[in-house]
Length: 101
Image (cartoon, rainbow, N blue to C red):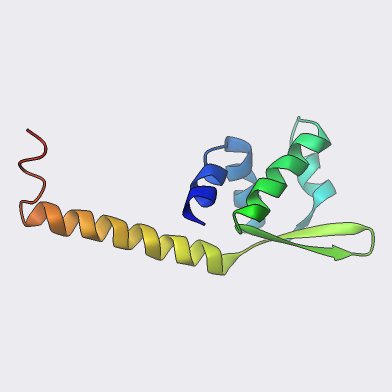
């Protein structure tokens, strides 16, 4: 999941979609309205976010509603915290001092 997660975050349109979804769930049409790019392009971005488990989708009648997957976001926050805590602890012990020279 990590590689897909970071790949999904690498695109500014996808990061903006994440920002929008943190405030409310939105239909695909509502998301498309926020951008000056074609609907199929937005759909591809949404698909990347879904595959990375950053967003979830639910069909409601003729609409697909997208939501931010908060548990996946929390999981990645924990992963990043552990990653940086490990690096910081290693630096404090002098483990990287020789590697930087």
